[in-house]
Image (cartoon, rainbow, N blue to C red; front, side, top):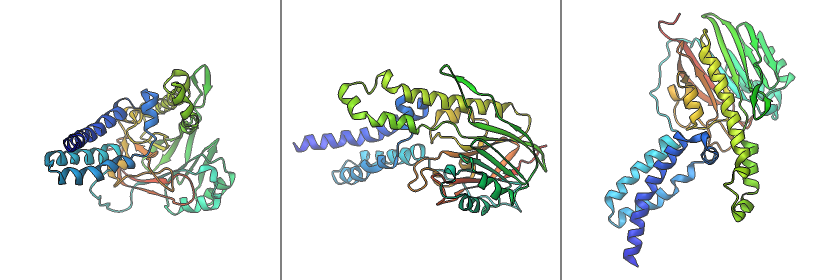
Length: 343
């Protein structure tokens, strides 16, 4: 019995890091292409470290030193690829950054437009991009500080510089219906010329995932959990979200102006769609951020949904997460300079 227990522990010591590697590759390479891996993207990854706490002392005490060292691989995979920890050297900024951009999903200003406005104004951004607003009061509050403010449906932009063009893109054909692309395009006349901004908020997976979870026990008992009928909602939801992301990325890539794309992407870390579609853009957090950068849910964060991307015209010099206590999301703030040699 003792030999069996030792053999079982050794097997687990090898299987655990192998399992984390397989999970990482599945999320990174398959991701939104399959409803199951798409669903797994949105689960907390902190509990995945629990076996490590038990395995390391047991393996060490029982003399499985090589297998103990193997847990270092598990820790690395959990910490960096799965949890998404980013480590960058601090940057030194000579003078004020050229452009400060703030993006914030304000949760319909449930905490009050005045509180949301105060949180935004604390950061003194040059351009503010708001999602899930539809609040005239917030528009009025920001208009007291920003000379250019525009609101359409759930999207709001406030800018120190003139907004010379606003585009509400055409609806997308998907599943036999016309669906909202869920983004807005703006052209701003900045001191460096025209800059195009995209304010994005693709469809949330919440309703589809809640529907899948609500009847999970019945579906497991009847053996229908993995049937196409039961998973269709998740698949369709993920497909629409990817189409919305692909559409805005395609337009952003085709722009002749410098580009900034910001908003609640509703796509967490290891999203294949984000990695593929924004490969030519700089992600502010990945470029100069530090730590996890999680933005949702605000009270117990485990996902980085809110992002700022910039084309090569700009260089990120600082990135932070803030605006605590006024939304179910946190805001993201990026400081950018014009890259050397840019025209």
